[in-house]
Length: 339
Ligand code: TRP
Image (tube, rainbow, N blue to C red; front, side):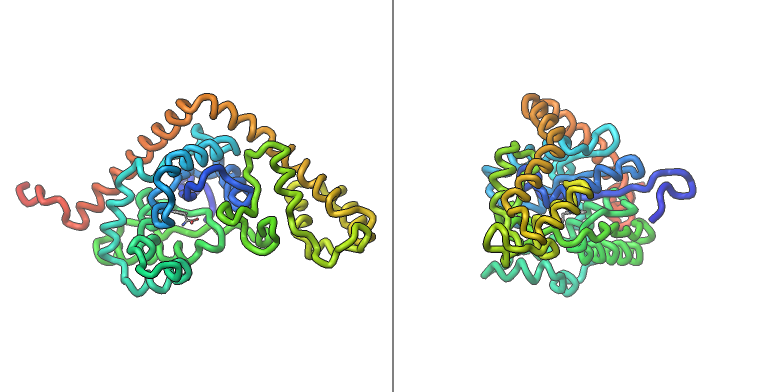
């Protein structure tokens, strides 16, 4: 997908993130920093997908604060309401309306074949329909805005294929309405492992670092990070290529220091604690501006409300146009029988 297109109009992109509270290092490295960098080139819509989150069985008492915290994280890391639409999914009811209508063109077999469905459904004795229908709501999120592209990670590729299928089937049944949205898969930065060095970073596994954490809290987390298991004593020679702390240095530490740490690790002249200390300081330094913006927003939550209300209003204006077209195509405008 090149941008802007030949007419000079910016291409539109949409992406969503589930609200599990403050964004963490994995969200930042895997998605948010890329989104921030796309805001000048594309017409961007960033959505906090709280209706997707209900399928994960979140605690209703915590959800509102989780949404607010993710919104603050979005704004703190540089998602910009002057450049993009930033809003909460449940504020625009057209998402669920379109998802219902997409049920008409979605084979159950396709939903059952989704890898994420197969994984998630194993956790239930009685599988909630929401887990099965999750990709339909995701297709609705994207197609409601006729997005040209969706920046996502590799793990969402199959859901994007599903979105394209839904668009194709809808267009075939009711007439050309939706684009076949392209997945904009992030260039492979290598899998970003959690601090345990074993699983993908996730808040529920407590193996990551909140992007807004104070320097001491960053250190408390980084200290626990797993390093080369063969390095038992401080002066054992280490292998940076198998060390997750080194992977993280690649994002936060300058090339010269990285090279120096590499040499010293292999020679056994620097211990893991010292190496982690450097990483921790660099993470805390590079996120300092985020902490500052977040604390301003925490002091002024009304401002966050205004931004999300305004985002929802702008999203709704686009959503309404699409839904008028969809209802017309699907014959859901009985008044037309009267003329
Ligand atoms: N399924 C996505 C995830 O878990 C979240 C999501 C919901 C999304 N709707 C979307 C991502 C639309 C991109 C576009 O990460």
